[in-house]
Amino acid sequence: MSLANLPEVRMSPRLTSLTVESPPPTRNIAVRVRDGKSPGGGPGLFWLGGFMSDMKGTKAEALDRWAEAEGRACIRFDYSGHGESGGDFLDGTIGRWLAESLAVYRGFARGPQVVIGSSMGGWLALLLARALRATKDTAPIAGMVLIAPAVDMTEALMWTQMADDIKREIEEKGVWYWPSDYDQGEPYPITRKLIEEGRQHLMLGGLIETGCPVHILQGVQDPDVPWRHALELVSHLASDDVVLTLIKDGDHRLSRPEDIERLIAAVKEF
Image 1 (cartoon, rainbow, N blue to C red):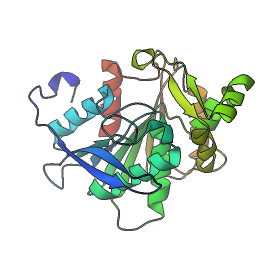
Image 2 (image 1 turned 90 degrees about the horizontal axis):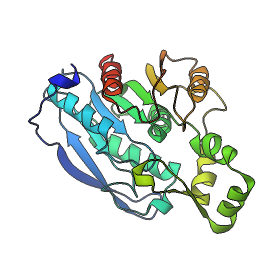
Image 3 (image 1 turned 45 degrees about the vertical axis):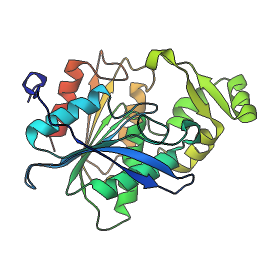
Image 4 (image 1 turned 90 degrees about the vertical axis):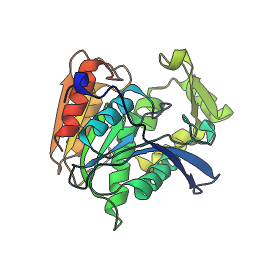
């Protein structure tokens, strides 16, 4: 189904929330849930957004519209310190946002899911799959679509790329503000806690097993997650069925109409 055929008059998804207490402090996580029309309507969609993004972004909204048209379930949420969720962004770490992702998945996912992760959400998607493989009685992951996956971003894409004076500022002051071309140019706070805690979740040092097929969409013109980073990720997904689509003129966000078409086509594969 193309974008032109998606419904203009829509039924809004249910807005709800859950409380996550660990790791502290306690925070309230906003969740939007669209229930599927029938159990046999195909896997649900589970959206994981990027660093400093929210669940009302272009890609997330387009996926929700497509899910509505197809009678699919769709779950999206905001990490703590993002969008409509509580908590302070400066408290955020990969482990904290992973705990929230797991809580939302276990709380709302029913039946097989296609997990879709954008940028940092791609890293969290892989961490989520690893955590779920160690548990029972959870909704299985039928497939995974990763958009410019920023796996190990705190180390490979942030810390190792930073000049020595920036590293010193982070170590001494606890935070440095990274200039951004997104979100009206508001800088991104990069905390010492984010960098140090991220080292507990690095994945590119060994084999990554998802237990499901994976489709990666990567822009060649992406200034934030180089396309070679996606190639490296593929080399670590050695035991999974992986498709890598390189978009020659694609940027980091991949939010143009033609990019959304590719995203929906990748989701439909599952």
